[in-house]
Image (cartoon, rainbow, N blue to C red):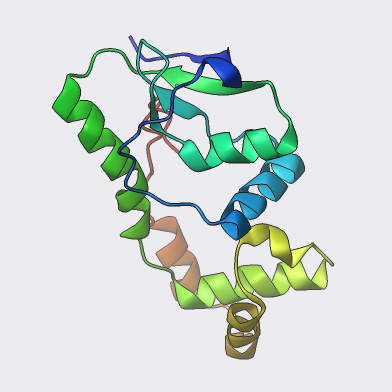
Length: 163
């Protein structure tokens, strides 16, 4: 059975004292702005005793926003080594991804045109300027559609939904 999202009081949650991931005040402010704009899109991961496995930055953002309850996934079937590994993997695996620079530049340029608040996406002004300079609009052809059609399905690790 997959864990279900629950709500827990922030005051009941216990940060992991050996959390290896750090969050600057600026990054916590970015997380808070994201939560304010988009809502909670990523719950904290906790064990059965309210110890935070992953999501320390999101908890700090909740405190900054004065939020009393946060969504959590209770992961209570792991041993100590697995909990430590999950905390590290949750942070590191996302960092191992790469960007498709052309697609990223296109997405950013479309957001700029729509007058979206670009501070909410986490890129610096310099990064956005560099991406904006890279946008090259070329007419699409059948090969472009074929490449899009051949993209592999992704699976949500929490619920197993393929998209």
